[in-house]
Length: 237
Image 1 (cartoon, rainbow, N blue to C red):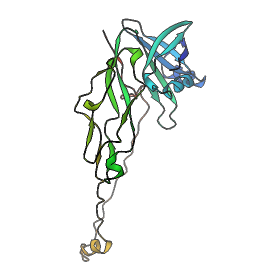
Image 2 (image 1 turned 30 degrees about the vertical axis):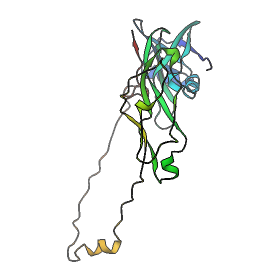
Image 3 (image 1 turned 90 degrees about the vertical axis):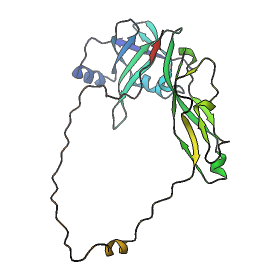
Image 4 (image 1 turned 135 degrees about the vertical axis):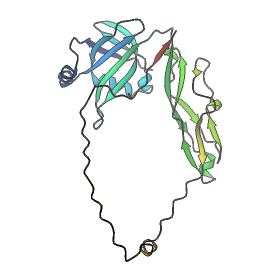
């Protein structure tokens, strides 16, 4: 796994206007959190954070935040993107101790074509796409690969079927279905236009209903969304 070092600077100014000026310089605001440590407002390059998010481990990547020459081992706590263009707007970091257990979410990836799809006419339904686990920071899996080629029609692959390292402890329930092969849903039949016309009495005139115009107005509030893209990493003592 490649090592990432992200340069960061302290920022004294906060608030929407200050953050807007910061983005105009090609940087984004962020916050550095740590257990029993003061939070620090920082600025970083969105390109550096984007490279980490595109890596194999994605948001679970363990990397160094270089703050004034002092490196701190961190993980992305959460981040915010611009909804239309997807540009990074904000990033929060959580300083970790390598000997302290973390709770994180790890993505699942399916491999192989199930037997139930190849020979039995079924379709694969990918139900659960990430697991909640806990482990030491250095033991966080990049992703968990699952071979579903043996899966027959009507059969399920559950969390209990996973074979994980002893260094990883599951928080997701063992009965949770990850994937299964099901029959395709039959398309609903559409009634012919002639039948629909015949069902409408000719003598009855349609009632005219006046519709009002609803206008939804909203202004951008706080910079952080109510539901961030990335869930909070909790450190367990």
